[in-house]
Length: 261
Image (tube, rainbow, N blue to C red; front, side, top):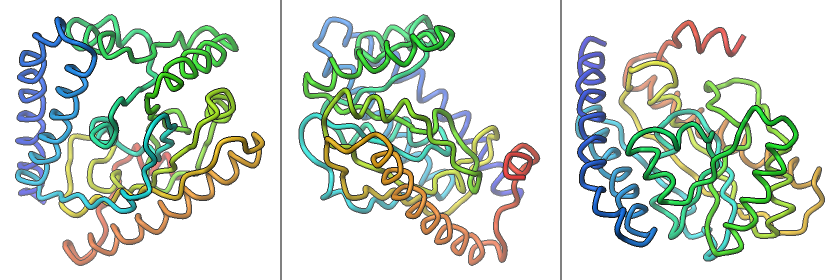
């Protein structure tokens, strides 16, 4: 475990230095069309995944890539770690995120989010937030973009009870495009709220797309069932791999354990 700690420490230092380097490299994209900054973001994600493999011995396997539809799309993914937020964009031509508007106020990083036309929302606006979010998402998706959304709203610890929010249903109804469910087990290897990175294989699985036009409740039920069933299977595979590598599963930290209880 000492080796894992040292590798994790090195990775985190390199990761943030690497991020700063890409921020500097991306400065000329302010004078380019939106695709310029999106290309920078995709390359940052790919390089981060490469660093993760080289330093932490974390590999990545993608399944079901052939199921990704072309054109406008909602991508609804399980959210367990930071990793998927920077890695999924590489699979889509015009990726789009919904995020809290304060992130767009950050120097350079926030300016890049604005340049990429990401959707910033005021989370303190109550019911108006959902209306604002759905309206902005509809406008962008109908222009041919792929909206990557996390239906639970925030990162959830591995094994935690699912908490799907109705906001994704409203966006689905308003956008009237297919929805691609995504399952993964990244939280086993890049857990939230800790700098530790555990060796093994992150598996991302793109599932069968849901067609547009489903009733709200049916959509949310089919979406959550598909994602959770596949995620449980992938987590089981990941835990089995950890048992082979360490002779046991990776112990959860206090925060994760409390979240699961």
